[in-house]
Image 1 (cartoon, rainbow, N blue to C red):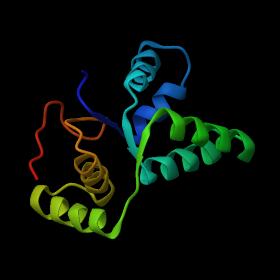
Image 2: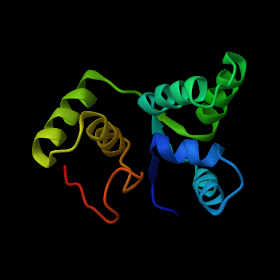
Image 3: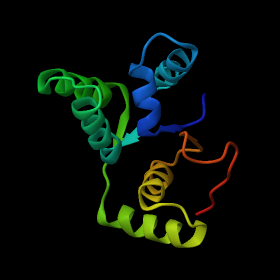
Image 4: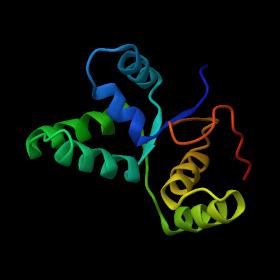
Length: 124
């Protein structure tokens, strides 16, 4: 059984990109139904609307596809507290800490992101 993975927003956006090795690799990560959070959905919608200039209807379809392809973790007040603890302990930015907290709550052992060092281990 593959490891439980969490996908950050930048990986979602790469998967939507033009045909390239990076886009293909990002898209392949969705085969095993990774976890994402409501934060990832929100950030993806923002990028789709503002940077990719997708219409609201297409953005809605994109979010619906992510919701059916991925396990969606809801950011709760407990997630926010955990993110504060992670930010204080490791010095990560708020949004990176929130992604990490969501991945830990989803019991994922791999976080695919461009924002952290490869192989970095975060202990809870």
